[in-house]
Image (tube, one colour):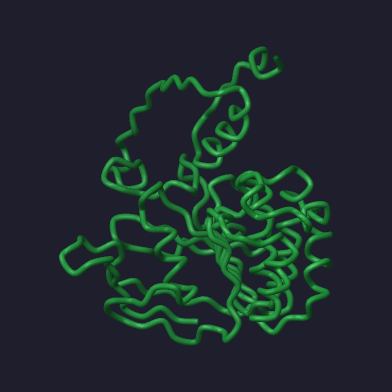
Length: 269
């Protein structure tokens, strides 16, 4: 799949979100899209999935079957989990038995009879993952797929991604939490400042040793674009957060390359 001279903005007089992007994705590639919040990562994912159309340029060679899981699954729908997924299997011409298969792999069999609006954020997120995987996609696009997942599912998802790649599928993922870093041959594409550039494969050391997390996009204030002898200043930011969210937020910030210290005594209460 090739992205050629692609530019995009949401409205005619809006600033460009992406401009003159050139990227290539090969069968079997697993690509992590990195960049700061608001850099345009989700926009790029939706363009790759075909949900948005470039204003200029082209995306060619997109596989005929695309699975897309958004960061926030739209759970306010009048279906049970099983009813929704079986309907999606019918629309995507997938074997309806795959619903139970994927529900088992993601540890959500007990949710099949529940109504979508009654699900927690993490459970709804699993439904979004299953609907993306049902059709055996040649292109699988996942926007922050690890957010809100339990430990067992977080461990299983990289295995699933690896299986899609092994059969020749392309996988493109935005992941702040760093759960993909053990995947062999992982590529990174960095989004920021209306550009998207290929950083190469992690195991080739292309973007290692920068002194910053690869999930951050180089920009005017980043050490990645500063003069070689100029060190980036750091500061201490104190954040007060609900105990129930502390570990999730800490994991996310660590995934962005920050050093995080959590008051274990408080979390243990």
